[in-house]
Length: 114
Length: 114
DNA sequence: AATATATATGACATTATGCTAATGTATACA
DNA sequence: TGTATACATTAGCATAATGTCATATATATT
Image 1: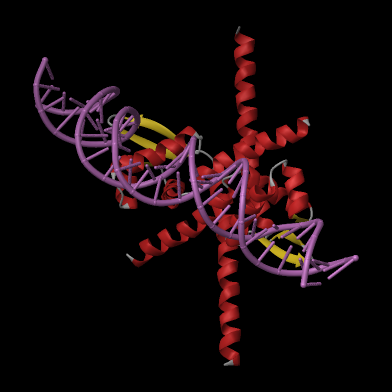
Image 2: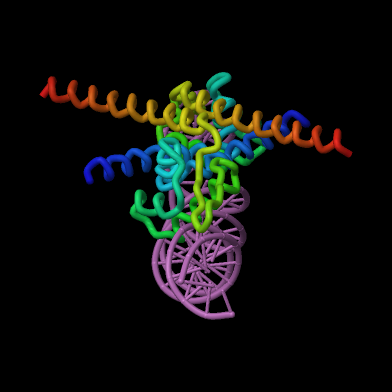
């Protein structure tokens, strides 16, 4: 039962990472930080969101170690902690892309019959 | 502003996938199905959960296209829809592994000093 | 047709989550 | 020391997710 418990613990940690990814705004933040580090104001502007909302999302990402924060005077610059997070998101994005292409093909076939 | 909206839409779809991944039980289900297809009872036993709970998690995975269901008599066999989902989870798992290793090294350094 | 098995779903209570608005904190600068 | 700027956090509300019990549905068997 130890391995059972261990598997549950690992999947729990993994789910905690996924939880951080399970929000459109946070995904946009991660992709933005993958381009280059940014501070809270810049992120807020890019997301078209409010400052408290951005800050809350950043706290979630920060608490789980997906981003690092570094203060520079009054501003705090955030950066992505691990490129593999983007690689994982890109994999999921490729799944979505294939799914959309698949549906498009189905549509074409239906059109051809009609 | 079209690209802005498109980016938001893609990240929304992506977040929807991640939401399905953001639960320890569902991650265990996906890894189990990656080994081999299984029916609801088998999954329920493996997870040590109840049948309705397993069924609800499967519905979430099914609705988002992460798994396929196929009825065979009275049982329904589920299978993973796309290997890349496991690849993405493995990437996240590797991030966790490195993080743990990093912490372990820190511990060693502290030990060495004391 | 009646019954048994496998799975899904409805209803409910509990818990968690997100957002907005307001407030708190830390740094810089006059 | 006082004020402005940049972020973080809290409170309160509305929404949503989870697990469980009971029940419904679908298939197989007799």
